[in-house]
Length: 110
Image (cartoon, rainbow, N blue to C red; front, side, top):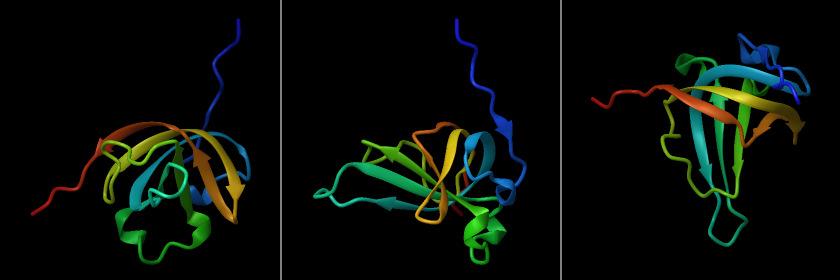
């Protein structure tokens, strides 16, 4: 019987490894929708805090991609979430595909 995969808890996205199973949390900075003519995928950029959105270097961001999805319920800019999955480098960015996620909080609209 296989044992569950061990995830390394990452406290800041600055500490992301080049590759490995990780658990982390952050805020969604932006989301990207693919056109209907492209293969279905939905992606989001995650950063450590809301205040860092405009000044975070690329190495302090995590791109999260859901393959085969045009939209993921609850995933929108400003949402804080916890992620678990395999991280790898793709096109110079730390990237996680089809992660397990939990929405921790949402921004309130005034």
